[in-house]
Each structure stands twice: as C-alpha cells, then as structure tokens.
Image (cartoon, rainbow, N blue to C red; front, side, top):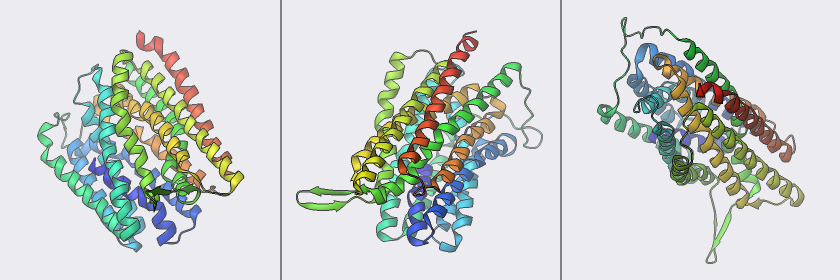
Length: 405
C-alpha cells in the first residue's frame, strides 16, 4: 500500500509539475510521462531475473524500496528530475516482481483462492493509490510541489518499515546455490507451452494498456482543462483540485473488489486458465466502453466549446475500473499459476513488460493530444481495447480443450 502511495503520489503530480512549474511544453511532458512509466515497468523484467538468480526475493524488495524512496526525495530538487525518475524506475523493477511472487507463494498449487487473493492484493495496493492524490496531490498543488514529492518519499519509508517488521510471515524462498546464484531450471514441455502462453497474454495486454494508461496522462489534462470542476454546496462554491480525480480509480477498486470476489466465488467455480482468459476478455470489452464515454464527452465539448460535466469523467473511471479489475489482477494470477517456480520472479517481471510497452505507446500517442480531434484520439483507445477483447476470447476458446486435457 505504501509503495503504491509513493508511486501514485509522484504520478498524480508529475504532468502538472512539468507543465506548470518547469514550463515544459505539453507534448514534451506527455512524452516524458510515458517514457518514465515505460521505464518503471520495463525494469521489473530485469529485476525479476536479479531476484531469481542473485538477490533472492526479500533482499530485492528491500533494495528496490530504498531506491524508490531516494528517488522520491530527490524529486524535491528541480535539477534532479531525471535522476530521480531513474531511481524510482530502477527501484520499482527490483521491488514489484518478487513481492507479487511472495503473494502467490502463500497458496498451494491449484488452490482456487489464488485469483481471489490477487484481487484482494490489487485492492490493497490501491489503498495507497487512493490516499496519494489527496495527500501528495493536495500538498503539491496548494503548498508546493516539493512537499508533495517529499510526502511520497515518507510513504515509501513507512512501507519499508512495515515490510521489514513482517518478514516472519513470509513463506520460505527457493534455495540459492553456487554462491548465491540460483541453479538454472530445467523446463518441461508443459513449461515451455506455458511460457508461450504467458508471452501471448503479455502482448495482448499491451493493447489494453494503450488506452488504460491515458488515465494519468491525457485524462489528467482533460480534467484540468475541459472539465467543469466547480461544486456548489449551500451557496458556497468550491473548485475540486484536478489531482483529486486521480483518486477515483483506486477508490472504485476498493469498493468494487469485494463484490466482484463474491460474484466469481458463487458463479465461476472453474479456475482454469481458459476461464481466466475469458474473464480478461470481458474486462477489455468493458474498458472499451470507457473510451466510448470519453468520445461522447469530446463530441459535446467540441459542439459547445465549454467545459463538460465531471459526470463524464466519473463514468469513464467506472467503466475503466471494472475493466481493469477483470483484466489486470486476473492476469497476475495467471502468470503466477503458469510460471515455473524457479523463474517465477522473472516471469512476473515479464508481465510488467505489457505496462512498459503500453505506457510507451500511450506516451507517444499522448504527444499528439491537441493535434488530432479528441473523438478520434479516444476512438483509437477503444479500438485497441476491443482488439484485445477479440484475441483473448479466441485464446480462451482454443485453450479450453488443452487445459481440460
């Protein structure tokens, strides 16, 4: 939770900080945002390899957390922007894969509770994502950007302290041999088939993320510039800070995850990979609806020239969050289920390659914001999500016989 508090705290401020304080052009700021997000989620692949082969899971988590904390504190200095972002990206790579593997290792192989556990884990980390815009965003917008970034660093420090105090609850790690180097695994035929399926899943999730990653980039700009954020309560008018809208997604994750877990527990006793792929395909279709909502908002803004109701953004985040909950934590569970144990952290890192490529493409796409009509911009995101839906549905149908066998 605290790691996500620090990460989302920086994310909530970054575009505004670059455009308003550093006076970077919007296109450059969007591109930097996308490159930073891409780097932060390309590094987990290498971080997973390092955790598997040299550091072990626990040490990798601790070192990654320290690097992230240092990066957040360095954001308080204007001329350290790029080194600070680099430290956060590298630390994130060491931190995320082994932590997710430790969650999966709490359950025996074949335990049907594992997908639900990853949904609960996903909800838990989003508690940090909920708090970050209110704490870091408010401090940054109202009292100074550096206060917001420093709060993110403090959050990471708290997270590290809790993790170190809780090590006794973690399951044992795989043995490390040959002077702290894990032995090279021998993969079976089923392992190689699973690896090919993991690669296919990662590539398809890239299509989902092209649209999804705009939520902190172009959508943040839409909220600031094209959304009516004024609220009147009892004759008192208040303008909602733009960064607060970044809390909608994690808030909905927290509210919607428990009923979704109960729903799937009652209605889907099939925890096979084919069933999980089908669930992911539904999520991509729902996320496409979020882009359709923004197409409607863009068309209204184009016709009136006035800021549109915040209800459009609320509807966007509702569809996007439901789609996310049916896609991303389920994908995490699939990776944990399909991965050979000896290279589990590496493959968990490979899962984040989808976020790397999605963030990179979303950043490039975001640099064209304002140069093409907003309706077309959001239509591209909708088509990308629908393409992912089609491919995942086909994969679930073709894989049904294989996994049944």
